[in-house]
Picture 1: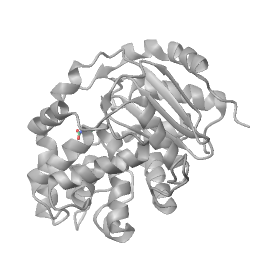
Picture 2: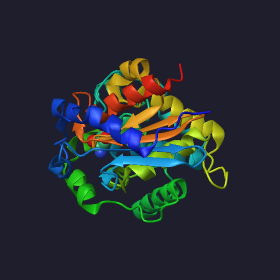
Picture 3: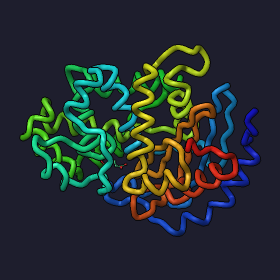
Length: 310
Ligand code: GLU
């Protein structure tokens, strides 16, 4: 029997971590993200039996950013199968910052080390089936609607435009991948798919629900319908453990010990088998790009409720 963390208890834990936001900074390399208040804070927990609790500014919308990499990977694996995807993108953690180009130069034939760094995620976006960028983004949105049971989830066009205009590093990664035959599509088209997937607006409720579906071995919580095949959900969660928290994934595994993925907007999604999904939003980031309060809250919850999978 799980000792449930209800809204009141969760509010209490949020109060404990609120001040940690002062230790970080809001991402500013994407102009639209820099406008967020570093002290925004929200969290949600979705249990596998459907019980749901939220606390803080839970109506706040924020963009998925890198958390989208887990979702696009699941869709690309469904579309193409493991062999096709992992012939083009590796399975190993890097220890480098998420937008690093360095390792691409070191491997022959060139292959991004994993799908959670930008080079790998850009290659994954290229693999999503669809004849046009609109069709690819539309399929990704439909997949999210299925995972969350929320048809209102959409792209924040302002953030997408802001990121697309300033994505010089991601463009260079894509040109490199194109030169080496890792992507088939056009550079600008693939960048458009990627920047749109990163700019999908969610709240902590929808994010916790996605985490819970992954924790439920890919099955819808209510109907039990298999949305993501079990073995593919397992692959995604394994990447969350080994590379989900940027180059702090090792210390996160030791201190928290749950599959999780963070994004530079300040969101973190955790997915814990036998428990459910947890989402935290706090846009103040540490030097690795993880939400400072997100990391801290998950550390506290993991220790208090014995959540570590190790
Ligand atoms: N859209 C962001 C980028 O590619 C995602 C980065 C992140 O959240 O880690 O720079």
